[in-house]
Image 1 (cartoon, rainbow, N blue to C red):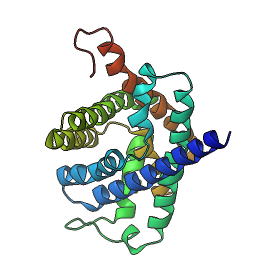
Image 2: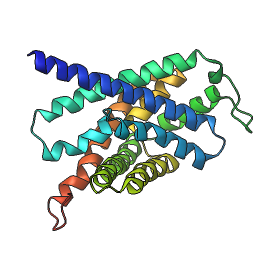
Image 3: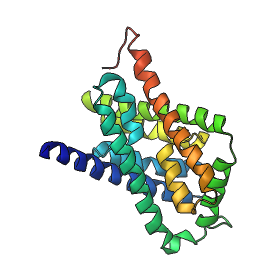
Image 4: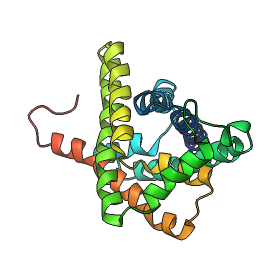
Length: 226
């Protein structure tokens, strides 16, 4: 029982750190006046997560396919910690001067920018949120698996590139990442909580489905994941 307790504490600690780092990445992205640089800076969050072996729901969920049923509990604990971590980051960052400061070279504050981001998400349709979340889940599995594979082969440049590119793509395309979305909800003060309570689970499910698509199909392939 003590060992199990320690595992739970470990999963929570690592996943809270992940949520905080995604919040930092989200803040960096919001602070950039260039969407491509902003997307690149956001990838700092996932880089820290894979490099320091934190825990992220969208990074773990795809591996449900190749693990025991008990692994689902680890994924759910990780999700809980991720949400808690984004909440910590958002609440603390709202107390700083950055929240109301202007974005460099833009006549808009960070608070106004995140409010606009959340408004765009909440004005989307449930089906759109769900589909965009599936694609994001696929990209996140790709990022984590590419990093894992690159490390195993000693290809550290490929491992880094494998993390950065999928994250930049999902940010630029506007795909929905449930943990990133939660940071934006917390950070903006979320004007429509009732809607967010519907859209957030949709993003969780969509990210989960997207995460298991690639490993599921690769089980049928003659070139399985190594």
